[in-house]
Image: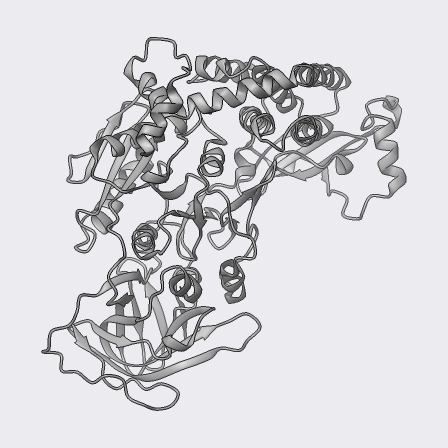
Length: 629
């Protein structure tokens, strides 16, 4: 690798001019350039901004320039967050390495909130057969914002790779075990295994430091044998059981320091994994955990969640931000609100920090409780993300059941929980769906409350949720979005103006219009975007609601039905009354159950004999302490 010798900063003083034949200290990669490609639903402006006579070749994964073509890395995947690498990792020396061909003018700059762009330096760059390393000028004098480079070609040229590197060695040896839980998604998981294998597991600087374990809950995955890849056939206990099985394998193997939980399609740029490894290795805090952001598959620039907080309900951070915009890159790294948990579509943590193992939820809520109970030092970073489906598109009676169960369990075991927290959850999770004609979802929430009233034994006796899943699947209608012929529906657009107080009062007094005479109902259909529930104010007095998920052109029609409304209202109020009447003993029992079922001993018994009913044991907590020690 050649060293660039002519880069000058704002004051014009040259940087080190050292012959390339001298020995250079080892370079450690912090992050590499991500280019648009054919494998993942990325967007060009998330990777690189190209202007004039410059473009990205998707299959060739390179940037091609004509004379005057410009490429800049002030993007979600391209920019380097100054504060993260300086304050959390104390990186004092930084260089950029470029690979390609041709002559360029390279400049380094920093974007900061409420400031104009600060240019740090500019120089000429000649690329040929060898990578060229350039010191980042002015790195000592910046402490926030995002760092980027800009290349302008002085003739025909190409850029095939770029990366930020440092001579500083990591402060800890990170041996990262990736765990993917799979269930009947062979078409997604096989390409993911190949992608991770070729770009991460076989990368020279990561070889031997990262492994991949696929826990196959469907027991039907066949993939070629490969070094550093293991496939574990597993009893289907949902995502929770799959991740626990992988976690047990990492702990028992003794060769790992950290785990990374990922969805079974592993729909992320592999570079996100490499950056996570680098971040954990250089971080001052040994308790650092990395939560990957979630970008929309349909609109890859649309942020669904960049970490989240839980205060009785899940609050995704930065939701709705357009990550093509530089100002949103800055807001996302400002850290006004720090996340306290990360979703298991991409979540890395140190094994030694696990005091409470995942609670047997099957799916949903396991990642929230896992982070909160272990008090990880959770960070997020631009350029570490997965692509996923909008949660609203997937929501239905089964997810309503799962969401209600974990939210209300939080209310029962949290020291600040209790009756008030339960009532808040009931209003949000039961009443709002019921008032917007989602009777089946409301019924599922009532079922979740009845199961919580059985105490922690319900979780231990229903690890696979087979009976519950079958019961809810049998209910009709099931509020499942289906392909729509939009022309067949004459649906009115929803109200956009603020609801007057008098109308709100009328809705309350008439129980959302279900006490009104039929003659006062509108024999029309109103349109609502598919979400977790509809807007009670918008659907008031309409006989029908068309719930449409616009991105997929799917949806269903929900109807005003007095009989079903009052039946589920009585069902939900009865389930709530049972919880409130037995609140004190239930809170105590669920707290004990949580302590007993979040230990390795509990889970070892689960996998030790799958035919024997699992009971929580009083000696489990001590075994957890032994593992932590």
